[in-house]
Length: 419
Image (tube, rainbow, N blue to C red; front, side, top):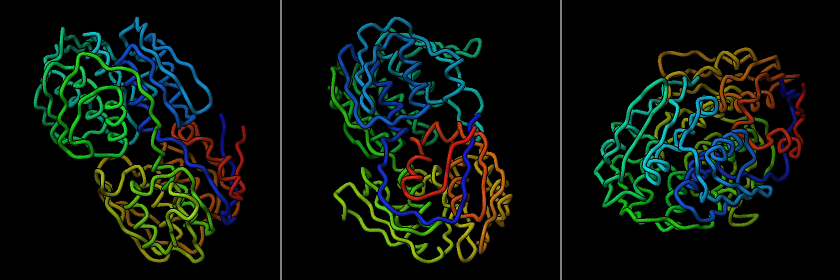
């Protein structure tokens, strides 16, 4: 099993290219199930989760032709309406096949996702919404079995804001009969990106980017071309790494307009961040002093993203002052705390809040990644620590970061993948 060996203490300098967004790519790949025409995608990130989704969809008969960061999908020969447990258990986003299959073919059988390390992620809102659209759903032997001769438009109010729930119901509604209204919809940029592509495929959607989506169902969707948005979490992770270690880095292929909260907090920490100097899709960060501690509370977009909580906590570990980090989205998303404390951090947890006292230095040690964003947090801490940090279970990292160690090496970090 691969590990990452980091010798900390190096400032980061240079340019780094930000990959396409994992959380946009996964639902967009599933949207290829909605049409028999070609769907051509560019800026596709090279990630384990993307490979898993491609494997799942190919098992259903979705044909794929890949070339580096581009892929062409063709759903003209779908012959299996099932997402099996052996693939769903490794990636919860597999549930996103449910809506498209049901809407186009009138049936779908998708394994219930297993447990998730960072907390409960129930799929009841997906089921509730599809039932409101007329689907008959049974749950047997760990599978969701959904049937509907033709989905009907409905007004759906979810009990909570759910990103994958919004995406699933949005895709299903594009081929439903009549008008569907999604209230309390997620507004994340990745949801917007999916909606933009669906419109390019012929869907009729209004309210994009708001919490109220109105979809007029159409008989068929057609092929389209779409460039997946850049990954705001990867971009913010690299910004945090520079803020923690010091340096001068330009991020290319990034979207400044969806990074406002992270940029504001990094400026509060003392980073100098400028947009557009190296092109309209670029960010320039400079950090010359020890960062100042920043407190925050995670919440739905456009608030502070839960996917950036761990990385900012790593920054706070080496910052001057004390910070409060409150997690409101996932109940178990502080598992990285004990690993950070192994590096010499001073973090105490009380309920959903972590009290982080910034230390003058961290000391490298063997640590273990517990989930995707926790692994990125440990990389940042290792880069800022003195001595060697060995990070185990980095398969978590490979799920959502495109060759992170290669990109960091290009910025001058002393980091390598070891067996």
